[in-house]
Every structure is written in structure tokens, then in C-alpha cells.
Amino acid sequence: MFKFEEKTYDWSIAEINSKIVNRTIIIHPEWQRNFVWGLKEKQLLIDSIMRGIPIPAIYLAKTQSKKGNEYVFSVIDGQQRLKTIDDFLGKGFSIKYQGSKTTWDNLAEEERQNILDYRIHAHLIPNPERADISLLFERLNKSSVRLRKMELWNCTYWTSGGI
Image (cartoon, rainbow, N blue to C red):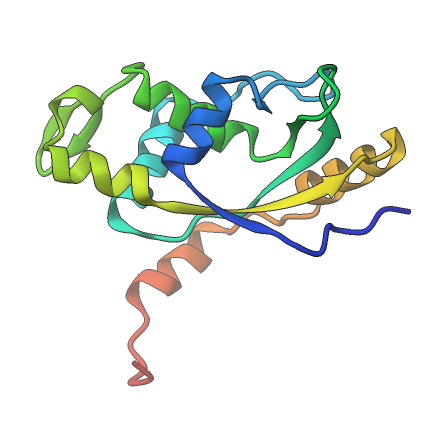
């Protein structure tokens, strides 16, 4: 049975993007499903990042590369989020921002820098066995219960004086 590496990381999107470009992070290892998010989910993620809303951590299998003394990180959980970020930075889609459609290129330098500085928590699983990856992948992807419309409505329109 695996254990999480004692040290986890908070990587900036700039660091993550560099690792994706250099193929140190493998977004689509052989166990991953295909990319399934639509434009609405992708836009919502980028909007969350731009607003500084925390997004879930990513889980990566940390293995030694074929070069010997370097490591690669294969995505166990977080593929949809990382692919969306990679696509947005690569000018793959537009978002609605401040009332109009915009792309990465059209954002002000300060807004782009805020995105690049945004930090994502990464859990690294060192040298996992195939069974470890399967177990974690299944647990992270099968155990959530979708909110019902009434539960979302309640969160939006609650009236108690707690906050």
C-alpha cells in the first residue's frame, strides 16, 4: 500500500505550465480517460482562478524518467483542470470576463500575472504500483455525490444571520 510523500507542493500555474511544456507533467498517461469537460466547465475553472477561489488539489504519480536522474509526474487526478489551464494559456478558448469575451492574449498584463501566480496544491505519490494508481483514481473519481438543485438553491438564498 502506498503512502503520500511527506512533502506536498504548492506550485504556481507558471511552474505547472513549464512542467507541462517540458513534459515533466504528463497530463494524459495511459490510465487516464479522455478529456470530457465542455466549454462551460473550462470557463468556470478559469473564472475561479481569476477570482482567487481555491480549486481542488491535483494528485500525481512521481516516477523516475528514462533519463535516470530526473522525475516525471503523471496525472492521477486533475487532468481536466490541468488540460483546461494548458488550453487557456495556449489561446485555446475565450472566457466571459467583465462583461465581454476575452482570451489569454487580450487580458491585461496584471491579470495574466495573477493567473500565472495562482497556486495549486499537488500531492505526489512516489513510485506507485499499478494497484495504488487504480485505487486512488477510483476513490477520487467515484465517491462524490452530485448536489441537487434544491441544495444549490438553499446555498444561494439562505437567510440565517450566521455570516
